[in-house]
Length: 353
Image 1 (tube, helix red, strand yellow):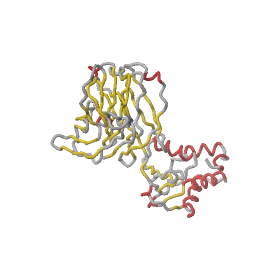
Image 2 (cartoon, rainbow, N blue to C red; image 1 turned 45 degrees about the vertical axis):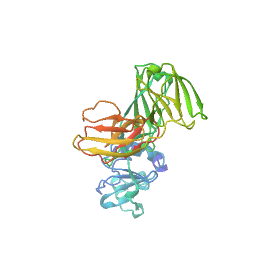
Image 3 (cartoon, rainbow, N blue to C red; image 1 turned 30 degrees about the vertical axis):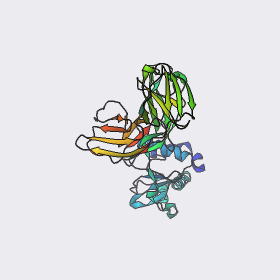
Image 4 (cartoon, one colour; image 1 turned 90 degrees about the vertical axis):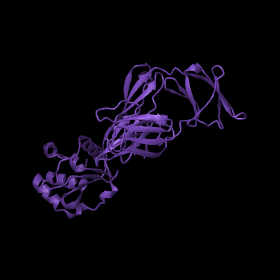
């Protein structure tokens, strides 16, 4: 808010509020403005009609001092901050709102030049994601989510999640929601988390021997092991009792034991980054197949701004995402080949292909 606005009498402020204040066509009802806003601090373009979320974003950014340009009729752009300050000063000085509008409209110093191509569309909504976690284990939330933009497209954006209290995931069978913030918008991300029973498979100890090239892994019950993976590839290992001798070449090798309940238990290494190498659309059967380095790393798939969690049954639109094998996933129920497919991993950055 400018100094002039802060010093305005209460009745004038009320008049301006009724006129729309920041978001109304305060300086342009007689100029047939298109009404689009451009934030020159963040290079975000807000298109009309403005959603409630866009209005909230504009007011928030304006109150923080961001500089805005508003598109007027015929491709004319107005320095909105200065125009509004001049409008307020005119009204404070005794001019009627109508005369103040005319003064602003005829002031050539308020006209500016911008390239709309340098501005990106604003975020209008974010599809909620659905995750699961084992009781007693904090859920792994994705670093990015798929956001729907004002130009009808979707893109992956970074998200900062709120802290989660351990009590939220302490009891199996419960569900809870986590919210996340996204830079330069008041639109929030939402993660719905279901707490499953703790994995039936437990690893009690590991010991690496690089001379022999193996990792000795002791589990609670070998009958609960479905398969063993090393660097995303399944390996054949016969246990001796509850002890597995897994071939490795380095202590950074990613070794995962997959339980019979489908839960992964990491024995060594960090979760690798998700990558995708190709996608193929089958028009006859209406599905898209995507080749990835490890299908277990994919939490959800976003197509056209709609998020589909892996393994969840198709909804009203008939579309669902599922795992085919260790390196392939598919999205069924499609009527046309999607231009892009966004893969949201269990952790790390989203992948667009």
